[in-house]
Image (cartoon, rainbow, N blue to C red; front, side, top):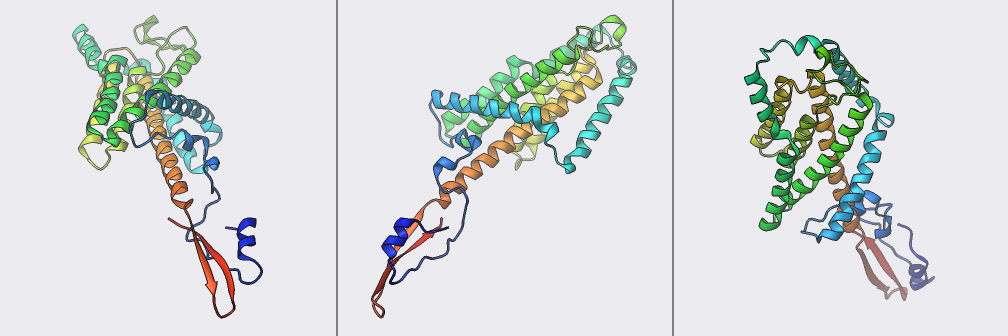
Length: 295
């Protein structure tokens, strides 16, 4: 770090000594925080007003990055986009056939529809609220964060889900012979229940990844929701697979972005504590100061 003019003045022309920084960073003031770091959720319980502002800011940043992600992807990510697109295309081509492979009885449809309600809004929203409130009552930062990030992922997924439905207008399996025509005023693609289930499951699985049973249960229930939407004849297989992939992407993105922002802000706070030490050399009657930036 370059010495400031004030430091140079204090040191004078007699003797100047400044120790090398233990660690350096280009962002040396709180004003250099990125927008994402400024909106980072606190490890402590926050009042609703600042918490709401941070949530809204994170949501807007999420939407910007989610919708521009295909234009900013790295070469290493291209294979996953290609794989996802190919799989979805293959499923769309076979949807009419696969949707007729189950018995498709009334009992099957009714039971599956009930099971699929695990991904409904009136199920996933209380789950996220329970995580947050449980974290507040038990002073658990992880539970609070799970609730906040889960809610953020659900809202992000809702926007993606609604935009894609309006853009594709795909018919449902029980409409017009089950051909699943696109741009015919439908709302089948993608599955909203499945997307919500996987978005929340992804956040929970990442937060509690050290407990192997938690990711297994989270993803297992999300998969059950997707399978039930298909067997209830509410969606085609491609609707479910695409929704699961997008939901997982959104949940993972929200979690990892928050982690990066949290660590970035923590590093900034750690590295911006200067230690100023006066120095005096009797032999040369010189004086000065030593300035070090360290944890």
